[in-house]
Structures are given as structure tokens and as C-alpha cells.
Image: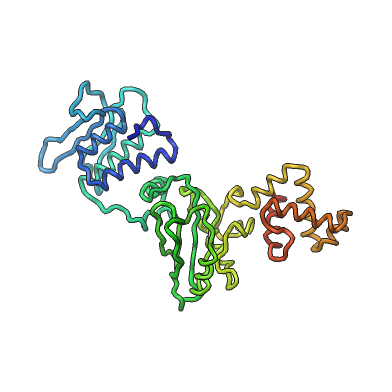
Length: 355
């Protein structure tokens, strides 16, 4: 059991408060249980006032952190919220904190009011599929944090999105691959969206040869996004779709990491360069004199097209150019001098030069 004063006013702290009250709802708590639990979390007196239909009298209860009812002295509410159900105010909740407000007091009272509304008029809790959808297509930050809590995922947990789609309509527009539960963060589940199937996977997820074989035999193409924190996973969804668009019969599953700066071409994307490993590593090596020399060699190679032409333009032996490109490849994690990586290397240099 933790106290509100022990939590930081960051996304992780907000999620713990949300999860605290969601647990009360899942366990079928009544208003008395809500008050006792809220008082323990707030570590101060809390109260609730319910307007009972058909009666002029109001039902008012107060509780302190030790579970005592109607404690004295009674302080004026330091923060209060109405309990609203379908635009009808059924009462209010409040806390009586004698000192300064805590950073999470506002969230605490908001969740008290929401939980009281659910108790007074029970509502269906979102399913795991709905929580997953709300993470990928969020309405606002609160929806994201609520879904993180509902799925049991810390907001800062690194995750990726895998987007799958059948090659043709005859194969089934929402065909998908079976992902091991060990590779799935929290209680996230796969969902259908716009004719494709979306899975949340761990940030360390990498497709196995068996998964690639399954995609090939099922006529499925898949793309794995760049990594992002769970609370920001919606910002990299486009890179999963872009990676899927690059998949083929020879490479049925494409990882966005392997596309480097080409991810910036993903439709509608505004991707932070720090999410793209190629750019992070290239900028890192560019901070040294030797690194700048290696990048200049790649620039000359891409412009001239061959090792010998690059060597001539730099007044070097072609073996020296090859050695430099090999060292750069080792640092950035892909072979910068191969035909299949020419577009990736060119995009990396264009972004570096433009930045």
C-alpha cells in the first residue's frame, strides 16, 4: 500500500492512481469501501455527499486514513468534484487536506468522482481490445494513461507495433500472425483496424525464422515499427505500416529499424530523429574527428558510385575507402556500401546534412 505523497507527479504516478481506483471498481466496491481506500491513499480525511432521489435529505459521509467515520475536527474541503452520471449531478466528493496541496490531489479527486459515478450507476469496463485500441488511436492523454493502467503496462515501457495484412483480399483482409504472449506487453491483444491487424509487441521483439515462414506460407506481409514508450506508441504506428509496405515474397516481415531514415517518408508521420537508430548512431560518431572522416568518405562514395571513383575524388587508395566504409558500417549497424542499403545510407546522409 502506498500513499499519495510517495508518488511522483509523472505519468507513472498518474497510472498508479488510475489503477488504484480501477481495482476498486473491478472488485465491486461500494461507496464506503471507496471512502476508506481514498482516505488511505490521500492520507487525509475524505468525504462524499450523495443526493438521494425522492428525498430532500442528503447522505453525507466522511472518513479518515484509519477508517474512522465522521472524524473531528472537520476542515473545509481543500478540493472537490461533482459526481456526474449522464449530465446529472448525483453528489460530490472531496478531500480535507489541512496543509498544502499535493501534486496528485487533483487526479485523486477526479478518480474518486469517476469511481463514485461508476458505483452509483454501474457501467461496463473497457475490454482489453478497447484499451489496446485507445493506446494506438488515443483521444487524449488521460485515455492513454487509463489504457496503460487497464492493460497493466507502465507508460515508459518500450513497445512496438506489428501491422499485418494479407497479400490479397482472397487471403483474408484481416489475416494475422500468432504472437507469443511472452512477446506481448501486459494484457494487450491484437485488434483489427482499416483492413489490417495490429499487435503491440515488446520493444525487444524480433521476428523468428518460424514467424517469417508462417507469414510466407499464409501470404501475409508484416511490418514492425520503431520502438517508443507505451504512452507514445501511437506516434510510431505509421512506421509499422510503412515497413509493411516494403515487405515482399523474399522478405515477408520488415523491421522499421532496418529502414533507417527512410521512415521519415512514412505518410503523415512526424517522427523524432532520436527514435531512428541509424541517425542516433551517425550523429554520435559525427562528434569525433575520425567519425567525420568516415561520414565524409560515405558521402563521397554515394556521390561517385564506386570505391575507385570515391578513392580518386579523395586522393586515397580504394582499399582505404573500403576500410573506412567497413568501420562506419560496424558503428551504424548496417553495411553502408551494399546495393540493397544504398537508399538507407543516402537517406541517413541527407538527414544529417540537412540537420
